[in-house]
Amino acid sequence: MSSQASPMPGSASPGPVRIAARRPKPPIWGGRLQELGMLLPACILIALFLLLPFLSSFEIALTNQRLIPRPVPVRFVGLGNFQQILTDSAFWTALWNVTRFTIMVLPIQCGFALAIALLLNQKLPFRNFFRGLFFLPAITSMVVVCVIWSTLFQYPTGPFNQIVGFLTFGLVGPIDWLGDPTWAMPSIVLLSAWQAYGFQMIVYLAGLQNISESLYEAAELDGANAWQRFWHVTMPSLRQTHIFVLIITTIQAFKLFTQVNILTQGGPRGTTDTLVHYMFTAGFVDQRLGLASAVAILLFLIVLVVSLVQRFVVRDRR
Amino acid sequence: MSTVVSASTPSPVAKVSAKPDIGAIVKFVAVLIIALVVISPLFLLFVASLKPDRFQILADMGSFRAFWVSEPSLQNFADIATFSGALPFGRYLLNSLIILFCTVLGGVFLNSMAAFVLAWGRLPGRAVVLTGLIGLYIVPQESIVLPLLSLVNKAGLGDSFAAQILPWMASPLYIFLIYQFFIQVPRDIYDAATVDGASPFRIYWSVFLPLSLPVLATVAILLGIETWNQYLWPLMVTQTDYARPISVGIASFFGHDSVYWNSAMAASVMMMVPVLIFYLAFQKWFVSSFISSAVKG
Image 1 (cartoon, chains in turn yellow, green):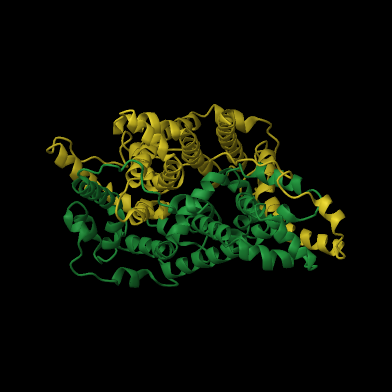
Image 2 (cartoon, rainbow over the protein chains, first blue to last red; image 1 turned 30 degrees about the vertical axis):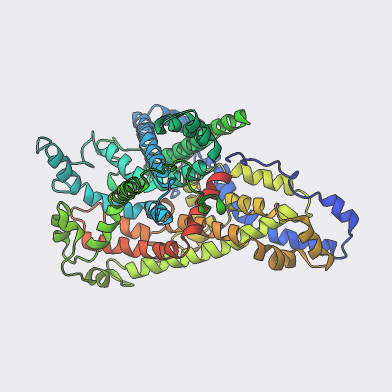
């Protein structure tokens, strides 16, 4: 199902020459001008607001340009920005944090999504209602999620601390979830997974519904129990879906910013600083546009590599 | 593509016939409980927004009183739904709605027009444009926002509505989604329209647009959710309340010593309600939109 990533450009569309020869149209030039007029607005916007900033980031990254220009002329610094980033321990901390986040959020978010999808794939009254209910967090803005969850994480009397205290008979004292260097990142992981699992859930649901019923019938005839059917029929049939879900979730995870910016500002002691947050601080707060552009390029390269991995893995299977 | 999810084929697993009722009831109750637990944070938000005392909200949070409001009041909403002053959330909401409306309307129109030419036009070089768009699709928004901010400031568009609408209207992903829909339209339909000597725009407008409501709805929903939830870009580009959207407004509650939880809760509900209304009205479309973005992406 996730195989339509790159259609052959041109070959899929109708051959224009053949048509033109068969049916010469009187307003051919007028028609082409009109087509140009229809294609250009979108292309101009994309060129101005996506291509141009993207290309210029490569140029800016080689200079010491500031966000608000200073009277001093901009200087070419070569690869100095990259050198500075790669020798900055805060950058490596940010990269490690975002990796840590990804490693934690992948199993939690995708596992939970798969579990809910399996539940919803059964014969169940009000199934569509439940699906709609479980999808609600996915359409909730991250800013709103931050408002709700910061009260849940409240120190010392918030619901999470009450539950932990209750379950451990008060042995574990209240924890400052977002203010404790050990717990800040796991807390961010939990609220991020809660906000985003809905997307993975519906992708898994679609994958589950594509599995042929005859596979389950054959397994049942062979005497496979529910657990064996899950491991030997469901899981292998979902292979493509797994790959897709893992790649998409990884790319999302590497862009982690909003919840960190709102709830912890990268703290405590840099334990929740991320790549995008590092870039934001360098470029927007400290106004060092050149340095931030270099981070942006590194971020792009990471996303590119992850996407290429997906292309190769998917192509491999076809 | 919308049938992938909505076609609810009875599950292969549920084949137990001997004692179906007890098992089914247990399963139903289990799902219900899980759903209630998972969704409870959203429920807490709505309950808390009706409590006018900000200290009471926090005090209640740790107990079951969080699920109940004895004297519901809309005071929180009345306090912040203003258009000037310290927390002009009426203005922020209106700004967000303006940005949403313009981006979605313009985006659906421009992207579908371009997709039509790429799929059915006779313009030379269409394949090159399409390949270029597919290549650009991979560039994440996060890695262009800072150079873009510099460009927008130089162009004198800082702190404006235009700076929040124009950059995100046209998008390679949405052009590509609509393109894939258009190329599946049977060629007879296109031929029949050209026989009448209709111009390209005419064919697009009166033949292809009416045919493609499902994909247009998909693009409108995805682009709408994306626009509504924008945070990083408006955080950087807006400097005053003039064009500030509600997401950045809500974030400004944080970072102080004491958060006005009553106002923050009410503002969050204000941000959720428009999405909820659309979601309740078009639930099936929402889910299938996200599916098709996944499958095609």
